[in-house]
Image (cartoon, rainbow, N blue to C red; front, side):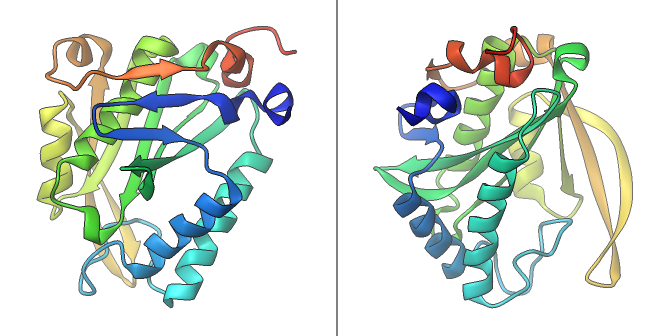
Length: 217
């Protein structure tokens, strides 16, 4: 079976409403359709990389290519797990968690996007809670970082509710103008004390080597 060679295909994160996992080819195509339908309001750009500032077909293609790229370049000391978020069995967005030299640093960074039609239902908090549970409870992380533009109150509110604390700011050029990001950091102690949904994880043990946490197969 393919999971014998790529155990990450068997990893599952589950909350009351959501399942997070790697997609089949057909599900990846459906995820591309979600991106093509829109990820944010036309007059907004919530990402450092303006990957959505293209045609719908190009957005869908970018999603497919990024999935393949992150699978193909995976290394135990430099990985990015890009999980598709399923609600009622259908793809609605992506929740990623990434790290470099995780076995040493015990620090991860998260990022995500959610189809515009699925926003405002609490899915963003629930899906980030799922990967934070994977990081802290499953992989033994000590710190998690994230960031959001200072004019993105919805994302900042999700982070605050999950226990993140401000960790400085940065200035970047996005679409030819300066955008200021609020960096955020979540410690293990703050995660343990936060209000968070119940999360179930299955299929993790065979993946530990891929996260740099056990001898490679």
